[in-house]
Length: 336
Image 1 (cartoon, rainbow, N blue to C red):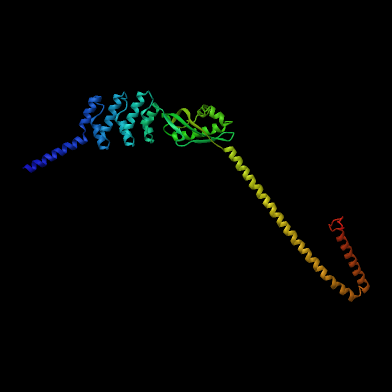
Image 2 (image 1 turned 180 degrees about the vertical axis):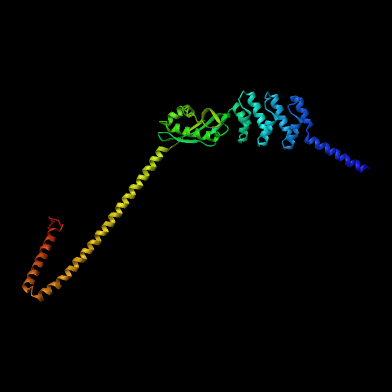
């Protein structure tokens, strides 16, 4: 009998525990005390448990919203958002914060932002307390003015969340990129770097007037140039590089002309040697032609001697001409 009583007692305790698990009477009583009878039904709590939804999460959320002055949000709305994979706690906190800050944030918009992967609670906080973004996040933005001087800038962008633009809007990385592009463009359009150093607020105004926050999840409130330094003389460096490049091109062209001249000289030398060879060949054929002329009777012995006399006469004249062209002193000093 004692064993049977223990088994019966165990079954009774197990049954009571199971019933209390599926029928959260404590949460139902809490809902009645906080919201009144009928706002949270016991059937709704049992259905949440069967759907594997945390009844305490939904109950606490509805109670907090009701106490904050948002009684139109029901348990069914929070259940639907939970089943869709949303963060109920963030939704509740964001709706309460937006209501207290007089920010219009409908429940549908908040759930859409949350399901899109954005932190809706942080978005509301940023809308109330604007945050500052460094542009760029690390280092400096390098830009060159028209006079060729490089300037390195760093900006601080104050932004506020644009809640309607959170769904499908660009992130802060896009804002940083656009601000950087605007700063580079503003510095590049400046006539000289000293004008930029004297009035850095001109860059801020020029960038802010471009409406860089269009299509983003943020509203740009201000752009402040936090740091502005002078870098290298890019214009002079480019000119030096261009001069060096021109020098190399000129040297290459001169080397090409020299090589062409050498090749042409060698070609002329080869042609000269070729012509000399032809002359030697022609001269070697003269004795053969003379012998043939003797045999054929076309050349007599007297003709041959006349030709030799002419050659001797020509050689003597060449010798006399060489003596006359000898560069010697016209007035030699005579020895006494």
